[in-house]
Length: 479
Image (tube, rainbow, N blue to C red):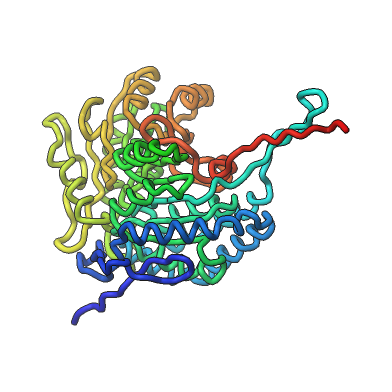
């Protein structure tokens, strides 16, 4: 029995289309390793068409009132709720994620985030108007930037698409968004839903590979390029965008330190760390995968964490008992496996460290101890269900180890000492510091990092403002 291979298509100017030259990409299930769909391999002609459509739609969408944009976004949120089961199925097919966890952990925040930006559309704030020179009044206008070229990643295809299109549309921009070549299905379904609500050309989806994304960023039409992806991809986007001084929004890699002091509740901390480290197979830029433990509790902590890993299950999307599904693609499985195979002699695999089964890209929950600060697995992002553990002797060393990587997206501190928690939150060089928790996000608070983790903010009013530009208007008030 063979599975029917579906044909996914681009969504341009209110129509579903194949690539202009007919080229396609096979889309492979990470659960079965079988091709379940084909998607367009969009080339320059497709990029030109999408950008032309978005540019043509921009003036009318820009001139809608905030209330009209709010109403449209609220309709999208409602429609996503109504089509939740379809979205869940598409996302699970994309990624192999457990259906139950996708239903409980992704659909509600996605819908909430769209509704947040719907409200933000009506709350564009600026400094007050006034007379800063005699006889002249100055005012500030906040305006949409224009057409936005957006590239979403494969770890959260639906949610990252929302993080990009919702603030952009709320601010009055038009969008051309490209999903990853390994996970286009849910974004194409979003286009079907959104297309029933927005005017044609306001929201466009281009499927394709890295060359498609590169052509989008290099195109002269977009005023802004936004990408969530690897550091290498972000650097390439920034370099390309610099040629015509495009605005750039980058959310790149992470290597989140989890600093555990001797007074932490070990059971509670291990539970929080294992959940935040293994969720989504560790394929999260904020995942709790780099644990720094005070030497006084190191051995006890490692033993407990290894047991938690052994008790964590990966498996099929319809298994309600699994904590996470497969890695997203064959290349990612190869990357994670490579990190474990190259471990130095002083490292010790306390749990896992191997593939699970012979079909699908499943990898066991893994804990590695005995590591040093300059080890490859400490310095580089694994992006898999692998938690490393290091020991530290005092607060200064903990800060040094935590900050001693090129990433600076997220971090957490586990302690009962309030003053210490406040000192650590000040000294940790990361865009987010959680205290006695790790990984919760809310629409009202910003998400974004420093250093090679990129710049710009997702979510919150700060993320909304990133999709606007500021104009000064001065007028004479004299007769």
